[in-house]
Image (cartoon, rainbow, N blue to C red; front, side):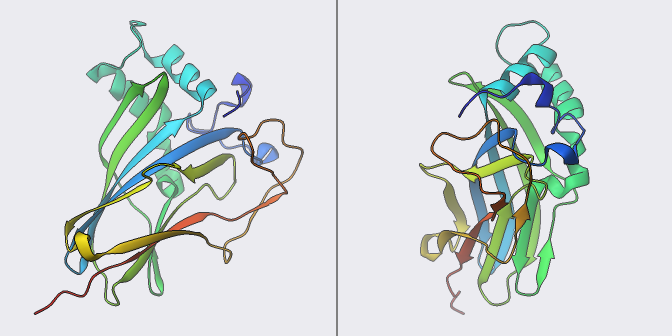
Length: 211
């Protein structure tokens, strides 16, 4: 990932600016999908941030400057650089047939450093019946201020009852167009920006549970 100008690091601090709708923040995602037979129990979401947003949050909320986050500092990050995402559905959209759901709350938020990268991890409780055995999850910012992709290695883990026979694939959902304008001054290495993007979507096929 290339560095971002600090003046643009405002997205998760509570302000979205439409004039800068092209990406200025980059998030790599890992997703643990919790199944229980024919139910989707919840999602554990892990986000790995680009160097400049990492530096911004560490500078502002690592109060003792020791390069890690204490319990009280995690609370500060939550209040000042995460909780606002409730207004944006935590960028998370679950589709089961004709119904699209978004989380109203999350649990167990934490923040930590991993190889000089700041990481957010949190749990989305869901507990819904999947009637046809197929559901999908899309994690994206509809303004495209944040460019969110899945990690190249081990992006998805399925756990819980029935997970051993379930499967997934990651596809672009070309039914959802994200339009953005202006020149792109920062980018992911090796990625081109055309003004049109599609969110990545995880499609999960659950195993049929035998009576």
